[in-house]
Length: 177
Image (tube, rainbow, N blue to C red; front, side, top):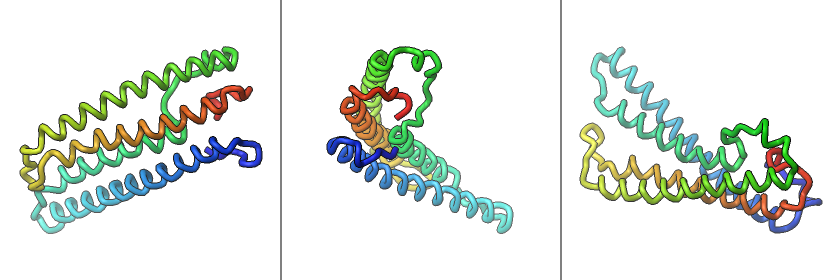
């Protein structure tokens, strides 16, 4: 999201800069995971159909990379306010009511993300002794993506909520930011 820096308050600019930095790091990681996944799948296809000697680890490795890519990508979607919502009714309300509904919605999402992050970390800790046979790693690393993705998304959502709060008096609909 881009703000007109000449007409925007300093706290909003700082929050937007921090959110942009986190977005870039998350996007880089997601692209890295996605690119690695594609290369692993191509290597698996070549090994299976060209060399007639399939690798046992490519399917699980690509699946884990895809899950990491998606859960890290949640924060990028949240930063750009591209999450799914049905707003055709809400945008007909007065702006103040739109802001209240959006705030309640974001608080509920934040509660869900907190639960997801904590439970995901507990699940990863509990799976430390479980080994993935084809990769030889513990399930801790694949399951850690749940709490990392949840935490990054919570940070981005918190920053977006603060930006919304600083823009509370604006006449712009919160669904158009």
